[in-house]
Length: 86
Image 1: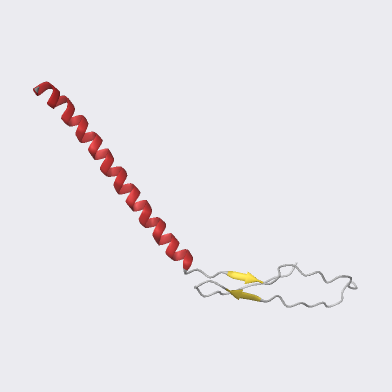
Image 2 (image 1 turned 120 degrees about the horizontal axis):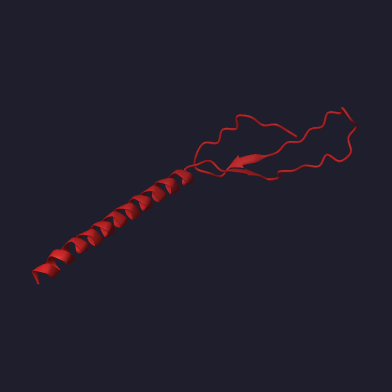
């Protein structure tokens, strides 16, 4: 009996320790996921009514103009620092 207890007890402690570590890691991962979700819900979200506009035929060198309307549907502040046409 003493031989079984001295063999099984260390093995049982290893299993319990590994289970505790796995639970701790899973809990930490869930907390990180919740924090990332909260941060992304506070992020800005840019939405454009159109993303492409066809000017049709235009003479080379002619000035053409079109206004793209965008809005922020996110909770965070949207800063457009640079925009460039192609």
